[in-house]
Figure 1 (cartoon, rainbow, N blue to C red):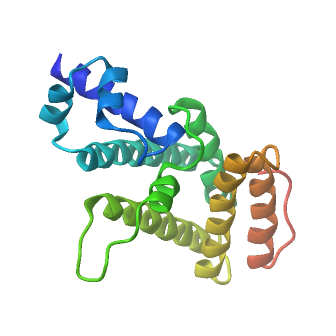
Figure 2: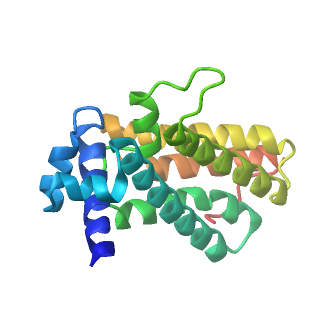
Length: 198
């Protein structure tokens, strides 16, 4: 029962934070949407920052699972590298609706901590960025790209661009456009012409 309550609160927070904005969404609104008293929300999470951290932690765990599954389903090194876009499609289809990337949204509303200071919420943003960079670099090496770091950097730009395009509303189908562009980039970085659709 307590776990159901906790999940309802996280669900409500995820929807409100990333459809209406983190700063403008008070814990009273989250509690009301979840159908619980504010004291119950604080009993489970202690603060709005802790609640935001839990939302992002769950989001990162779910996103990683979708990406793992997309990589496992791919049949070639190039396909495993492109799987980041397949995972983006499947993850967005299954996750709570948001305007764009929850991590980019949080970073846009929250200043980076000053030198010597720590911020557990911003640490999750850093973990997400590091995981994406490291995984893309590893997959680019496996795909025999001549400069895996550069390939990963360009694919990360395309990945970020997908979410910016979703927020802007144009171009349509940004994930498909980004995947096609990534195929050409991977082929050029591997020194070969793009094969048939992977």
